[in-house]
Image 1 (cartoon, rainbow, N blue to C red):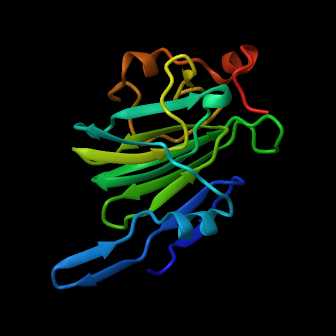
Image 2 (cartoon, rainbow, N blue to C red):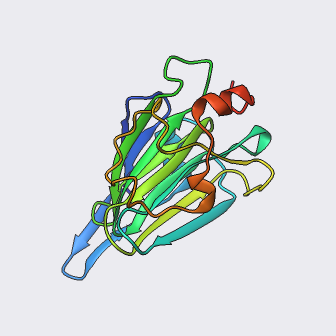
Length: 191
C-alpha cells in the first residue's frame, strides 16, 4: 500500500492525514489505517484500544469539547465516514506556546481525510450535513471518572463555530461544560 499524505497543522503534534485511494469504475478502495505506515507518518509508536462511531442526525450538532485526564488521557485518530463535520482540537498542554489555542479542520466522507490529535487536547466537532457519522480510534479506554468537557462557546477560545449557538444541538453534559479558566483552576490541564 501507498503511505498516506501527512500535513502538519498550526499546533505542534496535530496532523491532517489523507489515506491513498485507489479508484476505478466501481468506486474506491482505501486502507484507512495501517499501523506501520501510520506510526511512520506521525513519528511515534501508537496503540489504539477502542474504536468509536457517533451518528448526528441534525446539521449543527455539537459534540465536545471532550477530554480525559491523567493516565486515561486519549490520543485520537478522527475521520468522517458519512457526511461532513468541522473538527476542533484545543491545546490544553500548559508547557507550550499554544496553550488554549485551537485547530479547526473540515473532515468529510468524500475526501476521507483524518485528523490525528495527540494526548493533551480537548476534541469536538460540529456537523455540517445531516446524518453525519464520525469514527475515531483512541489510545485509552473510556473512563467516566477521567471524562471532562470544555465549554465549546468559551470566549477565551474564540472558536468560529458554523452554527448559531441558539440552534446548536447539544447534550446536557456539553451544555454545562467548564470554561478553560475553570478547568485550569481545577488543575484539569496537561503538563
